[in-house]
Length: 144
Image 1 (cartoon, rainbow, N blue to C red):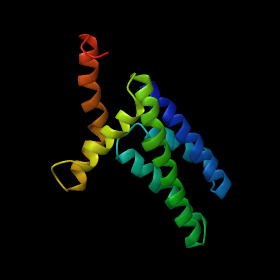
Image 2 (tube, rainbow, N blue to C red; image 1 turned 45 degrees about the vertical axis):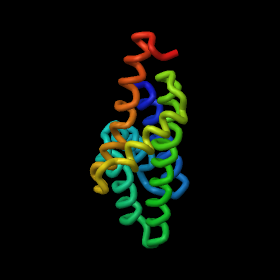
Image 3 (cartoon, rainbow, N blue to C red; image 1 turned 120 degrees about the vertical axis):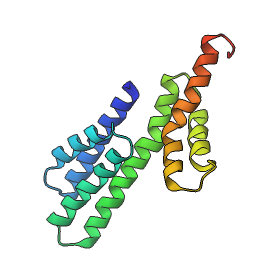
């Protein structure tokens, strides 16, 4: 939970900074909203991207700025949620970061189903599906 909290704080600050640079009103509120919504799987990430994009749509006359805000928020969420957070998660659980990334890729793209829902579920469960056996074996002194 500590890793998720640190990632949520980083996401909140990144969204605040991005919204402030772009010129969105309520940039601080959007950062706090992004921080809070980062705890909700899938729906929170979607809402944290959609709400600021809707604010940009209402505030600016230019469609290019709205698309820029959308892409910028997606990049922030991807970098923090898919690159940085797994590395810290692996370090906190004493698991190699490449193993964390491999588990995410394995459970996301190598699932039996081609449906997006099952891939998303596999992505979310990849940490648990990898951590439980490793920690169980480590507790019983089988690993390392």
